[in-house]
Image (cartoon, rainbow, N blue to C red):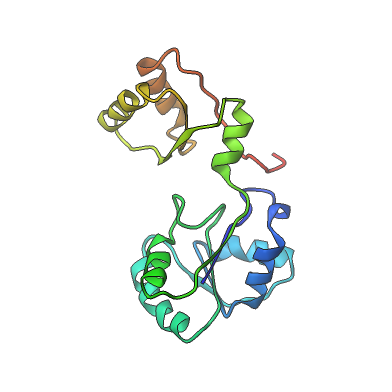
Length: 188
């Protein structure tokens, strides 16, 4: 199993190792075949794409494990960044590791570290929150927890919910420095 980090915006941010794994894979598991097809087309890679997302992760894991046992090279990608970091993949990685099947993680671009560095905040320690919870009570509880955390925190939030989330954060932690990053490597 080759766990492949994909570009977080600019298709030129893919690594040579990831391109090699995608070229050599018998199947490429991907969140959205349309998005992965754009990356593969950019590098003239033809691959057998199979959807692997939160709604079919359990079923696909059961289908793919026998292939891995037989020694097939399977590449796992998400739409952007590293699979299993707020994206599908952890279930397959854990299942392969539990069976002591080879798992290689091919690093690449990271929205978390890119945003942290771009923010200019001290980054010797930070907390990654993943996607923020929905609903005011859950957000309020998170803000209380973060009020005790003196270091940077990085979270993902949808553009539609961002204004409401920022207003909630400003009410709870008005003196907390804040940076909002989006489209970290896209030209737009």
